[in-house]
Length: 192
Image (cartoon, rainbow, N blue to C red; front, side, top):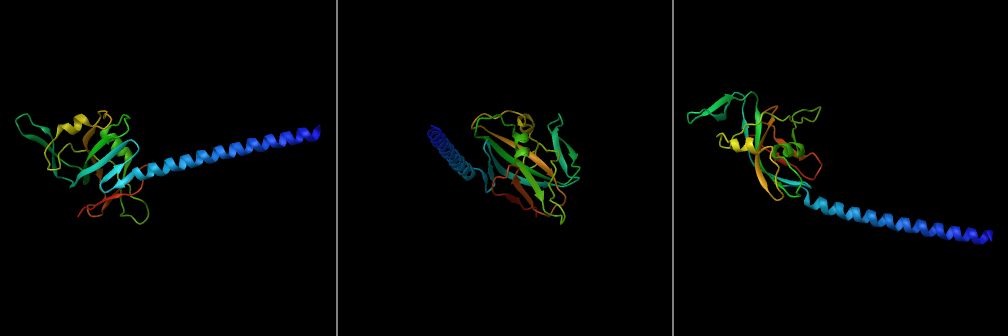
């Protein structure tokens, strides 16, 4: 009787272990194939970064030098108010498309998705700080659309234009944009 109980317990244990093993292998294979599929559609492709939730397409870039006058709004007489820029900045104009349906904020989503680096220090990675955003078009004219739309939720498959700036540490070293989520690739902006 003891032998029968031991054999039954052994066979039952073996079946349970083999069942668990095959289940884990299926889950692992499923996760691996899902991961591979996700990696093939995310990352940088030219000037566009695709993440799981959004697509960010760089439209234009421009250096705005310290002291350069930038429009800050209408002056009430048909002209524009201007003020001098207080730092050298890299302005980046981009489109954000919500590809998953989650709530995305144009400027906020861009800043959390993108990392900007100027490789001009031999001792550390020089990650650029977000600068004062000029609400201007690439041609330099004021555009209040950017200030009005920067905090609006983007609908699924909707696209909203945005502008963001990073404080430069020099005006000659290229700026490399990468993904904060370690998606593949990068995009380099040559300054001169």
